[in-house]
Length: 168
Image (cartoon, rainbow, N blue to C red; front, side):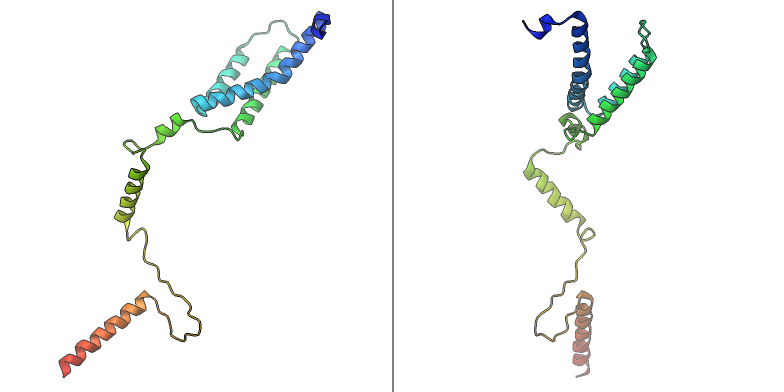
């Protein structure tokens, strides 16, 4: 004879309440995670509001402390929603990702790479100004100079060359 068959109606009622108290929040949590994955995270807030409204609209059925039970139910709902929101498995569903994608944008990696390259070329040089790079050469005493100095020296050299040929 199993434990359930030997249990009194009162014991069965207590076991049902324990099972609901223990497994109910776990089932609700899993159901809300799946709801968010299927319908997006906005659905979580909609569910929370609908459930609070529904709990608050319930009428006393003769239970002692019915209003207190409703308050506890709403607190449990809020706690469960908070837990789902902070869950590491909360992800944006593909449907929302597609909605955020730019219309007409390709899915092909090669085309995306070509578009990126074209965009970078179109934005050059403003997006990537040339950098002045200098290196240290061991044992060398030559002074290294930046781009501005090189251009200045080239202008001076050109001026000397032009000045020397016109005076001779």
